[in-house]
Amino acid sequence: MVSLLQVPAIGCQWFSCSVDAYTYSKQIASSRSFCIYEEIENMRNAGLIQGGSIENAIVCSVLSGWLNGPLRFCNEPCRHKILDLIGDFSLFAQNGHQGFPFSHLIAYKAGHSLHVDFVRRLANILLK
Image (cartoon, rainbow, N blue to C red; front, side, top):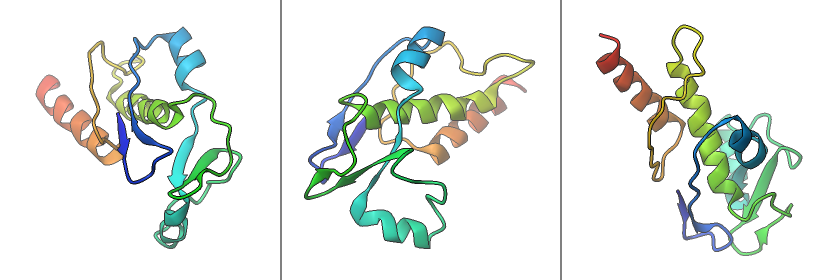
């Protein structure tokens, strides 16, 4: 779930799916990262978005909406969060497995640091 109510063009978004190779390739993998236009300068000053460009990311203004649309999916920001989740959970891969455990996950206002913390805690429990 993505909840950015202060940015009307994004608002609150959900996406649910069973992740398999087909779904991943057709509904998740092409989702681009996104950022809020009004936050770009602060993000760059903090050393973030170093490889970001309008070719590989979508930019949304609080007042003007999407600046470099069209979106690939109406809920592309949410799908990109799922892409992030899959990538971060791949850190859990053991012995050549794909890394994404068979599970039902709900991510609410999640991000890379929360994902990695969850994977570390899960590994501490399951790999003792």
